[in-house]
Image (cartoon, rainbow, N blue to C red; front, side, top):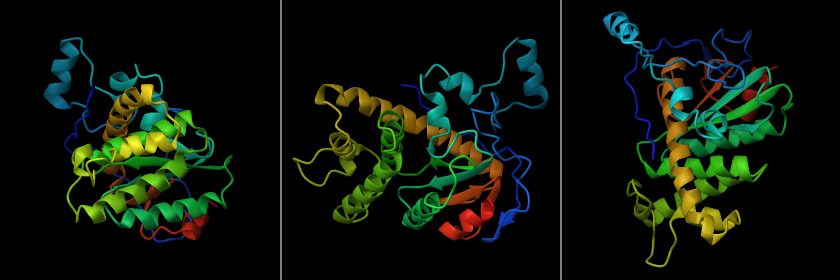
Length: 260
């Protein structure tokens, strides 16, 4: 399975900040990671100076997420999972989460509250996920699978995944979830991703392939999250980036106001 590693920070960030007030104009770099509008994306892996010259002389080219993940049927939905709205809508709301951060729950609640008030033709909500607890990639990947294969179930599946994570974390007394078995609370309990698949009606004969997909898709999204964090100057997760600007205190009303 391909695995995408975090790269060293090299990209410049869009440092303009929102304090809950509407954006006067979209940042010049808004939608820079949207594969429905661009074929190339900002990357901290782009070689410079002598490294770039050597690459050119060798007839090689720099790595890119499009080249690395482009063989995947749903790579666009993995690097840029739109949970609400038209992928080409003029306004962009990036919701960057960390399953392991309790603050994620409030940020996701704010995004859901905004969904009820936004016009899907004018604004979209995109999910990015990263964490130091590696099982979060599998959980995020399951959300992506549901978003693609169970239309309209992406947000609902994220609700369930965050709740299941919190319940397991409480039972495990805060233990880090690195593998699926770190989060299992009894000998007879299924790993959380498999619990989620049962909720989504995945046949048992397909569970292993969907679990593999969740792992891979979660890693693809994690890589692009790392790139977007550096590009927009996001210091920690969770965070909300509206039209290229990082919000100070995201709330449902502030998100809606920011795209008006």
